[in-house]
Image (tube, rainbow, N blue to C red; front, side, top):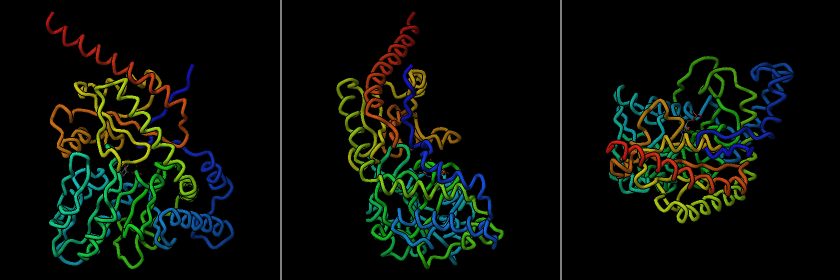
Length: 393
Ligand code: PLP
């Protein structure tokens, strides 16, 4: 029997065996607490600091600017809450309508506690326009938070341009780079970033560990209080094995970035070209060029309401893809909202198929997928037509 095809890397990625090997000793014999003075503690400390340098290198940052967190979600929360609470007087924050819930829900909480928030619109390809940021800035705007890459549609935002606008105004710029880190080049200095969130499990690292880049000189208030680890910004005994895993994953991503991005983008384009012939009803959602290398977001004209069925039928055929964002399963309708914000009508906003490729996929899997998908789309369509005819009987 053919092995399963995993094409859902935006939800999570398999652990790279080299990351697992790096983590192993810290799950086993090297159990020291990095805050302890003895040899066991010093060993753990030096592993954490090595990982900090590896994450910093991926971003062109200084190691002292990396704060480890327990997830991408926590990094986003720390950036938004930390920057807002550190500000004096009334604060205003700007974000976009299509951010991940880790940002949007934090904004909603901030609104309930008195912060004003502006949600920038996006165009039909999911892009935030610099002019809309420019016209939304206010004297009290403290922070602008725009994601580097969207988790559902894959569109990359013009981060350098947006961050320059924020900087000229004297506001901080945060980007949620959970989907982008390790997949596209991200240099915090070239991009003019003040804060950047990332998450290990999206780059072949372990789940439950992330990091926030905090440009030197920026003051954040902590959101977790305790023993003062991570420069007082993230108290708690460090998840040493997880942090080592994130460091190793960052180093591997940095090494492989150019070749991996080229390979995944070539497969993405190959899939698109092939589908144009085999499934003429398929259309691409998001930006055609400014998108994550391995990310395809597809609609099927007339079948938008059938996407769950299609995902389940593909699952049965041995292919793991998604009908939206896994992170939003508790937020029903988020995918639909994103498409509506992009200007899709109610019918087209009903569903999409997200196909996201990763490091361990093969050409053979791509070709098998190109066999399976058209057949599965056709069978779901046939079942859909049968149901409609049944109403006439
Ligand atoms: N931000 C984006 C854009 C994401 O896609 C995700 C997860 O899918 C997160 C934040 C949350 O990251 P984590 O799962 O590490 O909490």
